[in-house]
Image (spheres, rainbow, N blue to C red):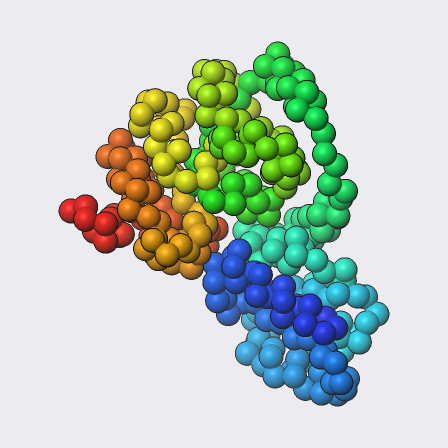
Amino acid sequence: MKYVVLVSHGTFAPGLHSVLKMLAGGEREDVISVGLEDGMSADEFAEKFSNAISKITEDDEIILLGDIVGGSPLTNAIEQVSNKGLIGQTVIFGGMNLAMALTATLMKDGVDTDMLKDSLINEAKDAVKEFVMTSANDDEEEIFKFKEEKNMSVSFLRIDDRMIHGQTVTRWSLEYPCDGLIAVNDKAATTDALKMAYKSASTKKTFVWTYEAWKKKNQKVLDSKDNYFLITKDSIQMKKILVDDGFVPSDVKKVIVGPCNDRPEAVKLGNNQSITQEEAEALEAISKAGYEIEFALIKEASIGTWDKFRGQFGFN
C-alpha cells in the first residue's frame, strides 16, 4: 500500500487530514497525520509519529509531506522512517498545502512515482495565485475566440455540487481524455465572482455557461475534436440536458455523481453523497434514457451504481 503521511507544527497536518476526509472519500487507512502540538517535546513527537506509522511495512511505500523543510516535525519524521528501514521507499516533500496533500491522496495509486512527484510540485505551485476579478466583457471575448478557433466533444459526464475542483478533475483526467471543462449553471455563469472562482479552480481551459448558452453552443460541442468534461451542479440540470433536450454526448453512456451535500430533506447514500427525492427522480429518468449512473467522489471511492439505491426512493 502507498501511504500519505502528513506532519506539521501544531494542528496543521491533522487539519489537512480532516479536509481530505471530506474530499477524498471519508476515512482512509492510507492517510496518516501527526502534529507537533504546543508544549510537546521532540522526543514525544518522535514517539507519537513512530506509533502512527507502526503498521507500515517494508512492502509499502510512503509519501511524506511536511509543512517546512528543516522544521522539527519533518526532520524527526525522516529520522523515524529511517530507523524503521523505510527511507528507501519514501518520497519526501516540504511546503505542504491542501493541493499537494489532495493530489498525493488522489493520484498515488494511478501514476508512477516520477509523474506523481511532478504532479505534487505543479499542483502545489498552481494553488498559490492571486484571485483577480475580470469583467464580463473579457469573458465574452474569450467565448468569441472559442467559437472561432476551438472545437470540442464530451468525454466525461459529472454531477458535482462543487462544480469544479482542480485536484478531482486531475484525478478523473487520468481515466478520461480531458482538454478542458464546461460547467452549466445559471447562478455561476451570471455571478462574476463565482464564475471567476470556478475558472480559477482548474488549470484546464474552463467555460461556465448558463443553460441557455449551453443550448446555443452544444452543436459546436458535438462537432469538436478536443475532449471536454461536462459538469452540472445537480442531477436535475443534467436530466434537462440528457433527457429533456435529448443531447447525446458523443459515445459517453455513464454519468459519475460526485459530492452532493448532506441536507435535512436528503437521503444519505454515502460520505458527502446525499440526494433529494426530486434529484432521485431526475436520476431515474437519466437511467431510463440508457445511462449508467455511478456514485464516486473519486474513482477509488465508488459506493455503487443507481441500481443499488433507487429502491430507497420508491423505484422498483
